Image (cartoon, rainbow, N blue to C red; front, side, top):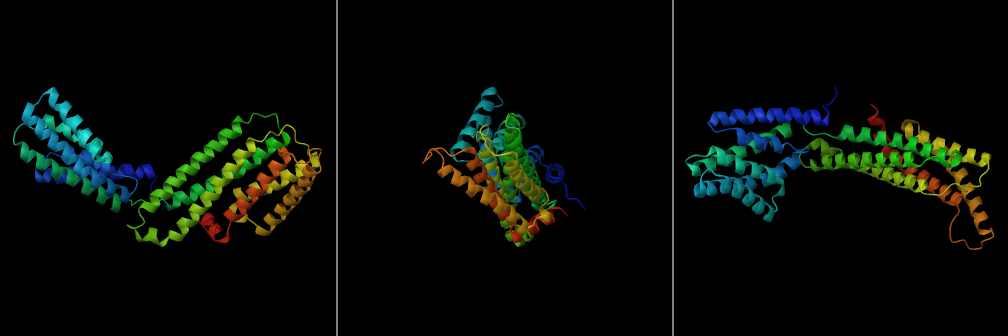
Length: 348
């Protein structure tokens, strides 16, 4: 059965938290609005975040409630009361680094001005009670209902990035070798999109690791999580070298058509490895790498025997082959025997 998508599960959990919070407050005879506000903002991407930020939001809400009670007592229900309550709450929360609770504390403070008419001290403690209910209910719902599990998303994302990197690699070298007059803007935009995907996956891994101490199935997969991080690092480095390739001036490349075809064939094989991870062949990969490495060293001899005895700038051919060999090395590390298992599971 497919797990709920990230956004959908949070919407459902928020709805459940609101309902349960309102029911409990009604049972106590307390107004549920403040508890519901707290419950809404406490549903975080990870349970760990819900707990950490909940510990900040409670004292922040207490500060907001206290200022509301203070200024209602001094000025009654008036514009200056709203202003002082909000500004004072913001200043004190900022002073004590309660940034995660700033919004809910300020909302609580100004909303209390409207609803408190008498028994201000009792109202203050009721607000603390409703805030506590909202925090506890939303944290419990986040932990027990569709508990956050980003493993499948992480694995699929890594495979998707690998496939896209293979497509970009092939497209980039085709531009370099056979279409040097093409506009590089499109290729650079593709690299930026790849970078964005990598950043999103890094965030998912961060979320997954945040709940490490709360769920046994996360702890049991620590080795797999580390391997996913390692694969993502290789893909990030590959993206860096793709970007470097696009910055090489390749209008003056002197390779013959036959030499260009040899390089393009090697690139195509490499792109196929990234796009079809289950078919990766280490020996075939090493054979293609040797062809490119031999080509690189042959070109290197040409650099040292050229008219410029000690050239200060490497020719574009030298840079392109260097980047390609580096990418070959990264792909080989990406398909380490232990990490191939991760990529295979993502396809299931």
